[in-house]
Image (cartoon, rainbow, N blue to C red; front, side, top):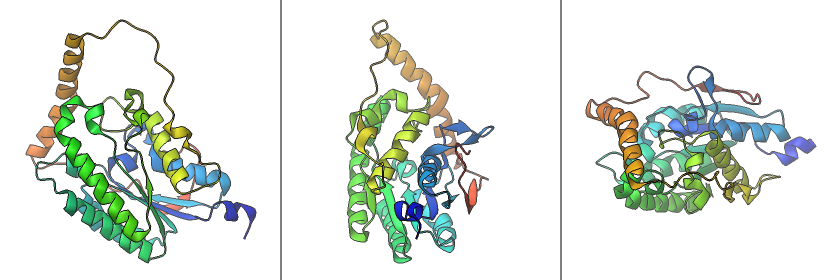
Length: 268
C-alpha cells in the first residue's frame, strides 16, 4: 500500500441521493453542477489521485425512490465508500412519515455496509431558520434526524451532524430558492462529511461562523414580508404546482455520473 492509499482508504466512492447530492445550487445545468459530493470526491482525490467517483443522485427523488432506483446500481459499482442523503423531499409532502423515510434510509445503510462499504450520511438543518414559512416542518426535521441517527447507529454509519450549528442556517450558505445550498454551503457540507469520516486534514472549521456582513440600512418588517412573498411566488408556487400535477423536477432525468470515473478538480 502506498502512502497515498494509506491516507485515503477509499478508492471507489458512490453518492446516492436527491438534488442536494446532485449539486443543485452549485453551478447550473448549462455549465454543469458541482455540489458537496463532487467537492468531497475532490478532497479525497487530493490525497490519492487513484480515487474513482460516481454520483447516482437525481433531483426531486423521495427516499423510497432513491432506494428503488439507486441502491442496486450503487451495489453493482462495489463502493468502498458511499454517501446516502435523502428525505427533504419527503418532509415537504403532506403525508410525511418519519419512520417510513428512516426505514428506506436504514435499508440502504444495511445493504451498503453489508457489502463492505463505509457509509456516511448527515442530519438536516432547521429549515424554519432558513424559510420562515417552513415553521410547521420543524418537528418533521427533528423526527427525521432522530430516525437517521438511530438507523446509522445500528449499522455503524458515519453521521455528519449539521443540525444545531448556527452557521448552517446563515443565508449566505443557501441559494436563492432556500431549498438548496449555495456553493459555499456545498463546500461546508463536504467539509463536514470529510471530518466525520476522520480523514487526514479534516477539522471542525466548517462550523465556524462567516464574517459579519457589511453594515447596511435596517431591515424593515414590510421589506421582510415583501421578500417572503417574492420568494413564495418565484420558488414555492412552481414547486406546489408540480406537486399538484403529480410531477417532479427530476422527471425524465438520469444520474449525472453513473459510472466510477477519475476525479477532476472543479468538475461539474
